[in-house]
Length: 303
Image (cartoon, rainbow, N blue to C red; front, side, top):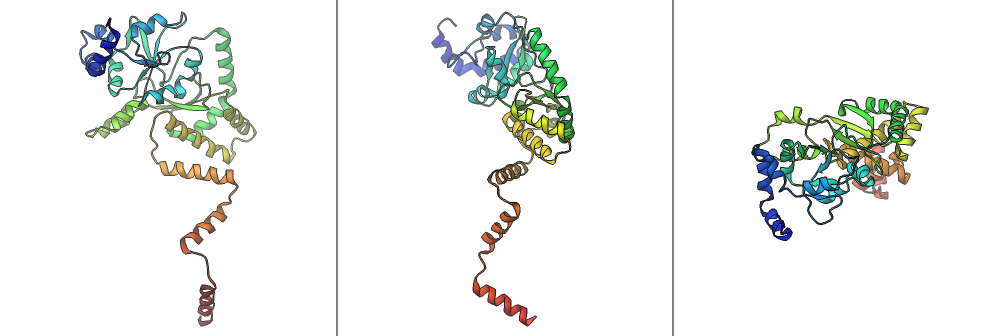
């Protein structure tokens, strides 16, 4: 791999074969890992290897962080990498479907554990002050988490305060040993998929909220005043469904989500629901003309 340009061409042609080797050839797995190349949050348009990644790791960093997704743009703009990018921690972008299978077998590289940033239990390097603040936020937002869990019920396993978000209000992560959102998408696209495995292999969803985001702070204030506020239920479900889409999942019923969005638009425009129903009836049947009105009067006289 001394001639970078030649190796890049070779990798474009045979990269998938190398990854397949990682998945199937346990004997040579460690050797093959040195030949893998990925884009990352700091590599720009160039590929980077695990070896180069490890050489750039911060002193306090113990793990190799990666994210899987459909495209490079999708993972680069994902909510899951916000905190890591802010702290200058490099994240590997794995956008090839076969990457999902390869990382299931390649658990570590040179003693450094491979950690998926879309799964629960993400541990980032923190000092004592940051740990203390995070514990305080968890205690402060516990009532809101409980209310949100009651509203979402079986949709999620739990609602917790997040340590990975900066700009996004919330995100949906999966359990450690289930499929990621990307893997779930890949499996659903299989022509000969086995639906019986979808139920137990799909990762349990955890809803994480950003305690520093104004949306969550406002929601907390509403719940503190009245936890039975009807608007809170609508907002929580809307936030959850939007987070599902942003986190790479599919909605079970997109029509219901669309109706919620339309209702929010109506509220924003100040349109009354009754007014809208009258307008839609007029559009369907057309306006009432004078002739139609006279005909209706005559029908009443006959009655």
